[in-house]
Length: 286
Length: 286
Image 1: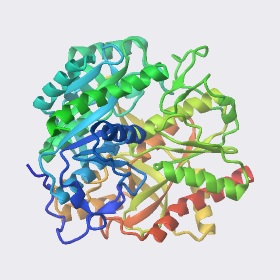
Image 2: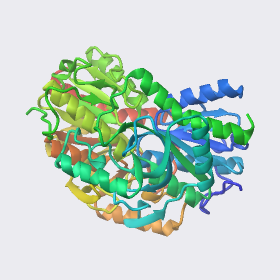
Image 3: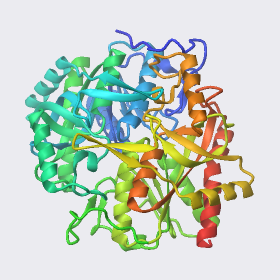
């Protein structure tokens, strides 16, 4: 299915400047994106540059230069796979999704899937576990993405693709990478919103933190990050399939600080990449 | 007044790893931050590197290398002034504020002020106007920053320092830079949350957009960005003075797209820098 604009105000004849990518519909040759089948995204620009180059090396698909002309995001292309970072948090992700979806719609791309490859805090799972999300809940503990439009609250449904989830889990199993499926809490901050005890502010006690984490566990939550509700709701609304595959850097039941030596960190950071690229290579036969 | 931790769970004897800066209390010499008086912040990493280097050139204060050891944020120091980017949106900003405030508290910094130098969309003001915020309102049109902690909604008061605002306005007047004072709308996304007609999605009409913009005008709003409630509430709570000084790149009453030639863009981008650095140089006699 084609990616199509959900907006009849955009005039087909006029240019549309994708401000945060630094190029417009007519100022870049968007036809180069017509063959895109997968958009891989995650927070860090550096990590997505690394992932793109590594995927290129492994598949022998050529890797583009950074195609973004602004410093807000990086955009790399390796054959039918895009690698675009989204920064931290739902607001930053929402811009990246809007502008990427517009770009793909203008390019006439078809049957595109998005996968978020991120880092996260585990809830009752060992550090290094790759969590493949089967749902996303917000700070209110609802499976909703909340927007404020014209001063009014709008709730959007969240959804992640079951088929992709099952195939990513198979891929992890095949690679012998520790993995779990479960819900993901999308927090709007890293400290108080995740009940950490190590922020600049802390008005609650250790037992409040553990009560909250146990409540999350009882709801089926296996990890905490900061983008999943926006990601899963925006793609559902766009009619595009999405999956989320995040490695946990710590088990929040054991602490709040990320305490990994550099080699372990780098190895953990590669796990979502290994799981996702094995899946993608099968799909695109690369 | 010293920057002091609002958290009695942090053990003075233990290290505290500032994950998104990539260093800890004991893994970096934090004493180098003891003399900090101003933290200048804004979205783009590239712009804050540029600002830091330019400030160094203009004042002959030496500019540090990028002191961050992670790629999430950049941290530059020029004498008593820090230049740290915060990415896009409140969640990304909240991490930067938590880790910067912890760093300054550990360093024993005193009498620190924060200034956000950003870009924004104008509401009824000409492109290029520097808006010095006298208040921040959220998507609900309330002067609050909303957090979700342990599944509960927590509203934080917002406040910006009146004295700094007056001095920044004087500085703009002295430099003959077009400026205004007024409220700032903090949206959680760039498209629907700001009633743009040019997002991937648009379920409202042009007249709904203008109704909203006129409502904002009647509330005293002069510009729209994505960080002001988090910024003004977090600093109030920390007991640290804050000001927001953003240039407008367009007048939303005239359109949604940022359509500036490169030279105009670069000149506009320098306006908050010129206003803020003239003020800072007077304060620190540099």
